[in-house]
Image (cartoon, rainbow, N blue to C red; front, side, top):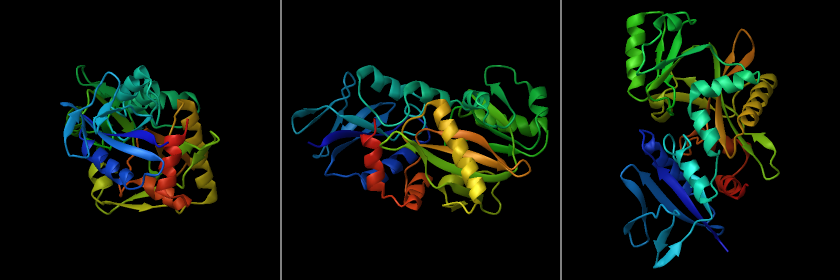
Length: 328
């Protein structure tokens, strides 16, 4: 019998537009011989499903069920496709855990942890994984500008609990006015802002997951190369074609092995599940990768990196998504 899968998309943040694109791409590659798929749109104004007759209905939040052709549909699993809140920050996973509905990806506690960049780097640093020096600023508290100015410059200023690099800035020198402007911009998207020392080096990002045997495996990593004139791998660079992406990365066997090893260590340290994407900077002078952040619901659009890494691995997206859905 086919499994009934809720493809959960939308969300409450500016990343919702990417969630919809990811869901549309996933829909094209799901195995319809194995799964009956229902796209569930979660918005701040409500949770909705549009049936085959194009009639929009509200999802029953008591058990996350819907009605199709007069019959009640209860899902076997939810396929998570919400970038940002409430999917990537643990809120929706917590709801699914409470009602007992299996779902793809990290559990609620891990999702909440990894959405907070500062907490994530603190946990992985304790496990011996290298991270950049940083300071955390709060919107409702006086900013410790002295501590920020003591960081090595340039610095990256970004929302602490948002994704897709929205609201990010790069400040080249310890200028209080420029820092304040960058902080104000980041505070538009979050009540917490992370100021992080910029590490000069090559930027790599790598997908990590568990296979059917529960072994942690990595996908071929991507090197992100910014086009001339771009300073940051921010939202516009990611989704407006302003980066050069090399998949698989043209890196030595030693660098490739180092990044893959650190990625597996991060995945295991945090207790991740499903597919995650981990970003690194390979420090040029130290010849070692520094972890930047963890994405527990990585993009699945046609332009996203995970589908490209899956292809480089020699897998089809159909088989990849089947593996994710059937994994325990």
